[in-house]
Image (cartoon, rainbow over all chains, first blue to last red; front, side):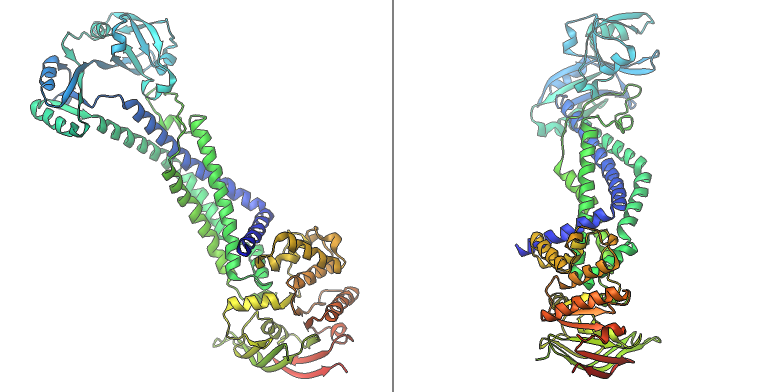
Length: 377
Length: 230
């Protein structure tokens, strides 16, 4: 109990000491909070994007097979489907129709996709929220698409995708097979690429190898590869944001470091008094450590909470254009609140610990003075 | 038994450097409990250095110091701090109060690391301020106190750990006659309570006071004369 009371007394004095220099400490707290806020926001946002993308890709096929001619993607025929279906372990081989469509009036690329949902409703399309915004088109409106022969085809908007899937559906136009083939002039039996399922997930790589050997003009793309690409992409974007803020953050860190590591004359005098009235060097250091811990922990928690609100309640307004860039169609999406304890712990050890140590070192220097120095002042 | 024994104390600053300076030279002395002794002498005579060594604030370059019969010269700093905290109360010439906190907080400052509960500490602090007629200023920040009030806060701070010995270095150097007399009256009360009091002073108002039991004349780092009250 005595030890706890002693720590409580020292904390009490540390807090009173912080309050006495509230201007300096408030400035430090603001700067520190800002740095934690920026770093935590980027980390939370990149993680949320990755998670969102991964959730959407969960339903994606195990393997996508594209045809390549001299390295260029080309259309694939249904003849390949039969060969693929004969590979052991492969099931559910399907042809997929999709294409990029450039709309000159708004300068945007749409991704046109044929889905099973759209099969039953020729003459209509379902569009992503990004497309809806740029064309100012809602349910029931007609959208004109320019076909392969230059003639315009008008299709009715059957529905607009909900914003929860906007990260990957912003530029999407879901269309029926008949309309797709008519628009792009594609004959029957020709597909953009093929998809297939592999019964045993562990055999996916083996199946991909078999496909490469059986159909040397094709390129199998595994779902895991797409997931890895997403992760790399969002990590890279997070890095870009950090790089943009690095200059500002560095200036702030230097400022904070300077304020934390230098003692004012008043602080040195105070340490001298404490030593002279009977405080041990270790007690002075503990007191200064508490000061550092209070500042850095408060800044850390404040920065973390602000970053959480920024990312999960305001959709990361500050970084949106960089982190979610999608040509002219910026998706609006609300990330699902999620915190990775490992990332929080990493942030903690990168912010709180160095700052506390930085505060203690100069105090240790000042606290090792002979107590009789104060007698001579 | 003597409360403090100094045996052949020498203190050399900056030893081995061109600016080497001998502040004390072979000083031997015994201090009895419950008395008031004044070290008197000009600037640079070694009064403050001697008080620092007696109060375990500094270690001598040579010689031995015994406090309550215990040899303290060879003790590590941590133990010296402990002895200093529990045996001595210091009143500095410049007072050295911590600005920005109240009189009461200044008074209890030396006792923070003791582990005593804050409530009990505050209670004792207020009682001390009350004894010195300053209870009504307990919550006032020290920078708002007059010179005399600030000195009484410094006295109360010196007493918070209930020390057996109170050490004051030139306590009246910055006080006018009335405040100096008030200070001596406060010391007289402490002496009556059984405290041992050691002053360094060259103020006649202090060393000619009737309450002083012993005046030790210092010069060039040595005790050159001694007068005891009859």
